[in-house]
Length: 218
Image (cartoon, rainbow, N blue to C red; front, side):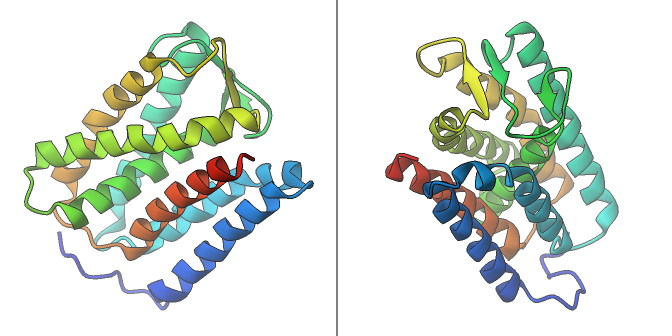
């Protein structure tokens, strides 16, 4: 697939600046006494991020929509199984911060999976272009686990979800890797070469967002 940016009137730089301001406002807002109001904007931030990332995907939109839909279904199904049975990730339950739920699982969580899988695998292609498609998928799944390590303390602190244990179980990270791996590998067979600076920026912003909140202890 071509690495050129899609034909769009939008340029990546102002969009990246806008997203940076949004995530920075999130860090500041959550750190203030009004944090409850800001943390509840998480679903809107995820939707906006995914929409902007998709707008800058090069090439036909059909395969992209199919991949995002696949990621949504796989991610949501895995979480629904996890919350209902304790399988895959461990024994946990979602709170009310992430909005409406189905089968005890927030509907927005599938968007989160789609956003992370796409953005992190774009980063893999950009940083490690010489790897085989299989190894790129392995690295993509490993990055998913690494990002979840940053996400967990913040999500637990703000009651996005809670574990029925004193600490996050190892099964959670193993489950993230297992669920992410086939979808990550498929990404690199479906999209041979993707240049999407907005996706790269969102990956970095997400990592920075959760790292900052962890360091601030909020």
